[in-house]
Length: 321
Image 1: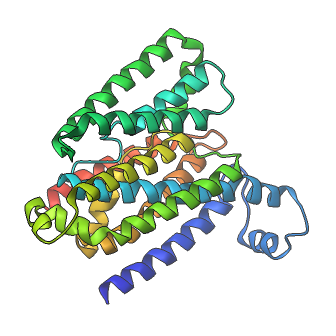
Image 2 (image 1 turned 180 degrees about the vertical axis):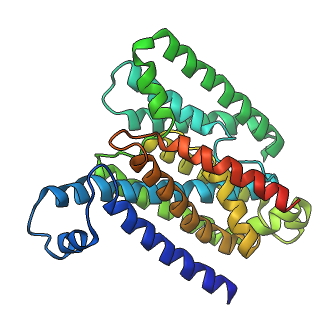
């Protein structure tokens, strides 16, 4: 009953936040005008172009990125049994950011392609070094991921400083940019992400058992190496896609799973879909604030998530001991 009430609240809240995001920005649109745009799609006005070409794609991107980062954080925290793990701890985000930095500095056509390529190479590199005797060592994975991420972040800063004319563009992208023009790429990302998340929910009970005790999971018949590998690669792909689409947006994958876990408990069969909804709402609120507060100037959304995420996380730690 409690979970049903919570999901209804989340869905209503998501709908309200979407409405607010659609009418807010440097160009104000009233609710009456918004509804008339949706009911008269054949009539093209400046406001309808703003809604359908700029704000709706941005909202769909925020929903996807916020949801996937929150889901990834929930899964990685369960795998590593560590509440401080977030999607960027494995170094994949730095790999994607490094690929995007190369594309920005050297004026390559597709930033997204290079970001995805960098993420894939990082996943393969970290995974290969973390496997010993056909077993995925989670401690090695965590350490190698952190070191790889730090090394690649240093390379990004070095390239940005060396090619200083592109430093502002690189830093702005790294802080999170939800403006998207390629709707085809957004659709493909949705399809890939939804398929991965469905499989993650399907195997989530095995991860529940694994997160309690690995030896007990083996006795229970859980294929522990497969589960660890599957969730690591899935998390890496979801994180890589997120970073390649909009840059590095922190705190969503760290804070949101804790908030959801506080209300519904640690069962990943429920935690994963609820985290997706909550993460979507959180990032959409942050993006709306980023667009509205200093309009027409736009603040990178990663700054807003940090300003909101850090105090919320600290307060959770204090109140929950």
